[in-house]
Length: 73
Image (cartoon, rainbow, N blue to C red; front, side, top):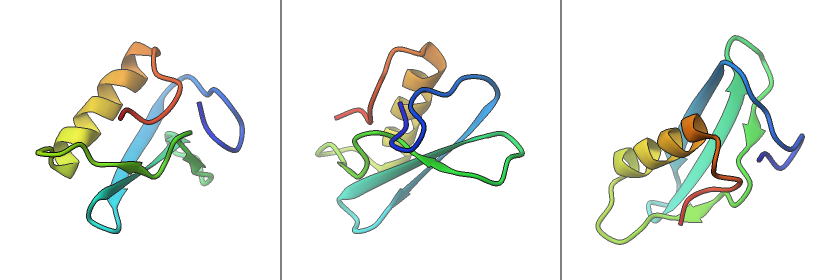
């Protein structure tokens, strides 16, 4: 679920960034589009002991499964 337009489906690109270092920001776009959308729940705290890459893999798995409606905690 995105903040701006709700649920989006299809061929998507997901980017996860961190600033400050203990928070994860997730943006999603239709692949090849200009517009980016913020994943609901972003920014989310990075779980203790997880890297940004770990978190990104969790986000991708959730998006691919279609089961998450907001950023994983």
